[in-house]
Length: 238
Image (spheres, rainbow, N blue to C red):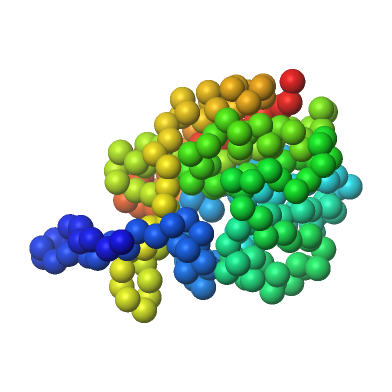
């Protein structure tokens, strides 16, 4: 689906191409790792802090994309199973140094996870929830595979970005189109109630805004200075 939206100040229009989530990320995979991605820069140290030491632990990276977390965690001694439904994203992940240490699985997250009950010490789902409209069953699956003494870490683009008309998107260098993988217009309450409805215990919830330190690392972050960009949750099975 294609339509035009307001573009630069000269009155020209940009063409927006809306795609199913999988198709969008297959297209995005070609340039995902090379882009200036302020959200990823902001998110990664917070993920490390919430996960804590992972050496010797079983970790599921649910919606792993190009393996940015999976490969870092495996390098720190975790036994990582990384799942995604984008063939393009997984292809990029599997081609990276260190990929042999990760078990990559192509899997549609609308289906039950191909992992045993209580098999994972840590479960991570990073920048995935804004593409999930079936939140209660999704959170329930994350909790099912998590060990009773483990926990789930979930990150997502802050819903405040929707108020600015921002969702996951990229510019196709070949066409110049603004390509948007399908997203779900979830609010913070949807994430919290989805987790609670799945029987999980909310242990941590925090919001993180764009500051000048992030702008110094990411030119694209400047337009969001002062706005919350990242939402973090840590959850435990009951």
